[in-house]
Length: 289
Image 1 (cartoon, rainbow, N blue to C red):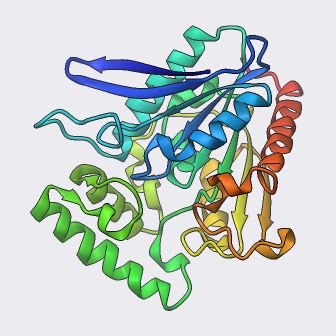
Image 2: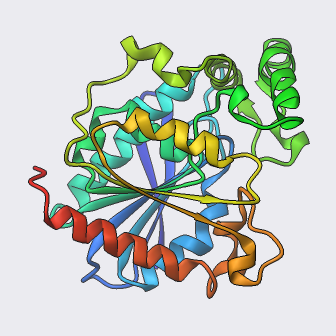
Image 3: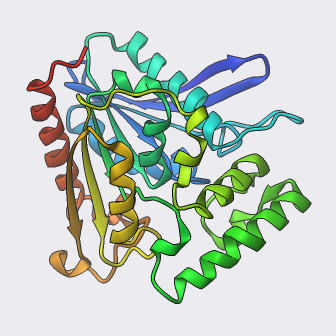
């Protein structure tokens, strides 16, 4: 069963989400945190798969993306997505499914975002798919030069002139609100990435947090060096990582988005069930409250 949900943050600002349920006796809740500019509908097939395998799944759009329309004159950025939007979805999950533990599947920025918000203390575990630090020097040449141009020139200039970054032209999702684009570019120009805004980041005790990082050898948007650079930002958490290649599964490619496509249902999605089982087993040994 797929149910649309509208969550109100403040007057005129709402988030649109969808809840996927298959069995009232589901063992846990999974929240899907999308990548930057990627609408929740992209993850719908994966969400249905998880719901058919024992989970309540909540997929949502950040404000300004997909069905979560940003009212005229309203601004947003990545930090707002973390501290307001994500926090609101966690609160919804806690109040609606009080007897169930909460897990996250975070894609790219969606796996970075939990570090920015204290509400992650209510989460038992994170499955971080292609989640990385965006610092441009972590990429190999020639991608490094292209990213330099993106973060220093193209994204700041176009966002300032247009009031948004035209991500649709790059076929990488919805157009990105200017505030989110400008903050993202600033983060990616700095080795500390989002930690340069440490004064805006909620305190988070990560000693009871369990994370599995997953990367793919052909994912140019999240090379291993960038994933490894994100892991220290979750210092204190119980971490595991797996790096997979298309050749392991007789695939031509996986890339940054392939894991969530319907073609991976019988190939890679069963691994997600194994990873979630591992996170649940790890949470049983913690004293998280």
